[in-house]
Amino acid sequence: MKFQILGTAAAEGWPALFCACETCRRARASGGKDLRSRASLMVNDTIKVDLNADTYHHLVTHGLDFSHIEHILFTHSHNDHFSPGELEYLRDPFAHKRTRPVVDVWCSRDVADLIREAYPDTERLGISVHEVIPFRTVELGDVPATPIVAYHRAEELCLNWIFGNLDRAVLYASDTGPYREPTWEFLAGVKFDLVISECTGGFLPDMETHLTVNTVRRMREQLDRMGSLNPDCRFVLTHFSHNMGMLHDEFQEKVREDGFLVAYDGIVLETQE
Ligand SMILES: [Zn+2]
Ligand SMILES: [Zn+2]
Ligand SMILES: [Zn+2]
Image (tube, rainbow, N blue to C red; front, top):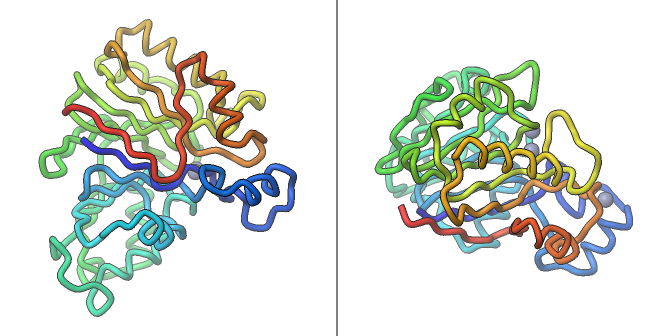
């Protein structure tokens, strides 16, 4: 499988939309890997995780062709992950000759309700909305995808996603704070080749509904203790707030000993299955 992280910032972007802080100023001057857009993940060429206001930027910046998208998965309804207005452009006359006339949308009931609120006639859009059940795998063509319960918002079921067979799996953990039960119970039966984890806070103090270097370390230790990490399982960090204060290279240097790879917009990660 091929994973391309199209956006690696937290909600405000980096440089943040209206911010003049030192970190954002340095990111503007530096450019390249220090320009981070809102969270987005592409799996192979047909599966898109989250759709936000930076979707058009992702398309043109990374030279992509979203007409091949067959499945759109949502994690939760924060607007750096869910901009339902973008779904409008799936339909005629905005889109022609898409690979599949109907795109399958996979999400929680909370997000499904918001989509139906925005578009009472989802068929007109050319989407079919499926409410997923946590921990129950769905088949996206030849890619199994399993939603798990994140710990992120009290008022909404937030999902993280596992891709691939559960013995060679890939975790996309964005957004979440440290997992609770029953998520840990489920993860005990999974073996990961790759974990792409949010690390919104970097080296800031621990947060309840996001992760930091410290809590990602603890997550890795717990997965390891449970036997859920295959040998050579890679850990890739993403979804950074500018408030964490370190540019890409500085942060990568600080987490090198941990073996963490710091993502940047457009990074491609491949797994064997
Ligand atoms: Zn987010
Ligand atoms: Zn800033
Ligand atoms: Zn969020």
